[in-house]
Amino acid sequence: MQQNNRAQFATRLGVVAVTVGSAVGLGNIWRFPYEAGVNGGGAFLLLNLFFVFVIGVPVMCAEFVIGRHTGSNVRSAFRRLAPGSAWSLVGYIGITASILILSFYSVVAGWTMEYIYRSLTDFCGIRSATALHDRFDTFASSNWRPVMWTLLFLLCNYAILARGVEKGIEKVSNILMPLLFIILIAFCINSLFMPDAGKGLSFLFRPDFSQLTPKSVLSAMGQAFFSLSLGLGCLITYASYFSRRTPLMKTAFLTASLDSFVAIMAGVIIFPAVFTYGKEPAAGPKLVFEVLPAIFAEMPLGALWSTLFFLLLFLASLTSTISMSEISIACMCDDLGMKRRNATRLNIGIAMAFGTLCALSFGCLGGVRVFGMTLFNLFDYVSSNVLLPLGGMLISIFAGWRLNHAVLKGELDATSRGGRIFLRILIFCMRYVAPPCILIVFLAGIGVL
Image (cartoon, rainbow, N blue to C red; front, side, top):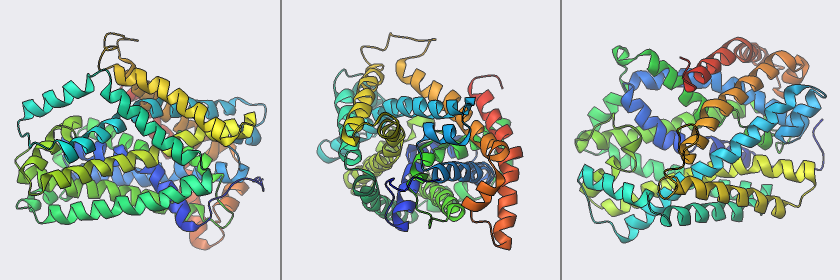
């Protein structure tokens, strides 16, 4: 059913690089450490890994199957598989969510660029928590610097996306992902030689289940779902570029494993430093932009490590936003017949307009409220709490209950005895495990639970 004239990723390495790049982002390097910090460390890690493989991998396989079998973008894929039905709404959910996320996510990515610049040019070793908070708050509330970095970050996206699937997305991912892992490994080695590395590693790897609460379980489910970029349709879009030789089940397990490995490496980087320099592991979202700069200020070669860390965040952000943009670009090229460069310009132009509004919501537009939220928080809330879990739940239900099992079996290459066993487990999780778990995340996100 796949279109023969559709662009394809050229190599197996390229497939792994782009799918892992899509999954690895701020959710791994920023969100995971602070979620683990406020939820007890090792126990949260185990819960998160459990949910990655019982929720994340089945939904990822579902997206891979839908994308490669149809050879279509997220909108057309459901129209091909369920013509004349309301299932095509799943595609529109993904497109809307991708635009909203790209808009506010690019603002945060712009912050990482500001901190790269400051690490290189103005690393003055500020150690006071109050001073670091004031410094970040002054920058974020500025009316031009956050906008400048947001637009520059989106221009980086354009430069990659306009070159196409193989020469742009795949080629750049083959460079950025190894570079990202090299920086991660360098940081891990440095952290392991810190005086209180043992305390940090014990916090991360020694489970203390007495620290777990119902909220911790919800956080672990949400982290597993969001860190893999599920529910958007970007994996459907990327899978439409897979060749028939790409083993979907193995690719899903490898992507989930590497994504989790990056999150664990982020913990190995951060928690030894936090304990060595007497900081609070439960610092929450401010961990990256306020707590870590204080740690870098006390470290030997602090400016170098600060630059590398925020470069790491920038690379992770870039590989994620490329996949978000490709969702809309593929739809515009396939369904509207637009040339790729024009589609890329339109996509990035929309993101620039919305991204500017989100960046200014910390400054001159801070008083503009919709349902009591700033525009940045509104975009974050609607996409993360409503559209993503809704899309992921519907994709899982569609693959588990609506899609022909022969399609699942054929696409997942479940011909061996072991393959058939895994297929049964995957289908069971698609039907009975993932949907109710994602529903719980959805209800918690909108405040019902």
